[in-house]
Length: 180
Image 1 (cartoon, rainbow, N blue to C red):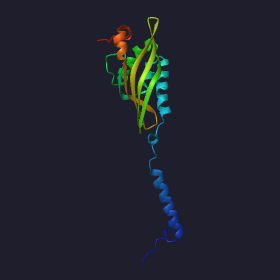
Image 2 (image 1 turned 120 degrees about the vertical axis):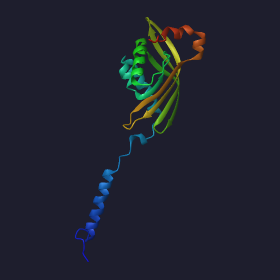
Image 3 (image 1 turned 180 degrees about the vertical axis):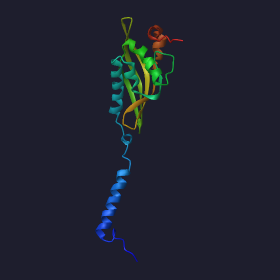
């Protein structure tokens, strides 16, 4: 019978076991940032981050807050936007109105890596030198990416029905006239 020279002494077995354990731990994937539960404050901040991007006047900076396959149902356009090019195109028009938003009512739901913020917001916009306030219903659906960043995967915004009935010219004045 042959004895192994490597594992014959008790401390060699312990050393081997420790080395094997360390190698296995090094190969194990790190826990993803996505596994950490978000807070309502973190989700509230996402609107501020997006609104700050609006203040830059740069449509590309705004579109960067949307996932590549995000869906945007915008307030002042009848066209559904389903990719970065379409979203950037919409904000190219919308930013000409110099929008500045605020949340009036927010209802946040967080479920793991998905968060929904739905409610009512108001935008101050300027067209032809005239400032207007436009109130709208909104929903943002955010998804936390593997790197921990939250991106918008769905954004719906629509004018308040009462404004459309009581002051239809309000929306007509800022509605984007689509090309084509």
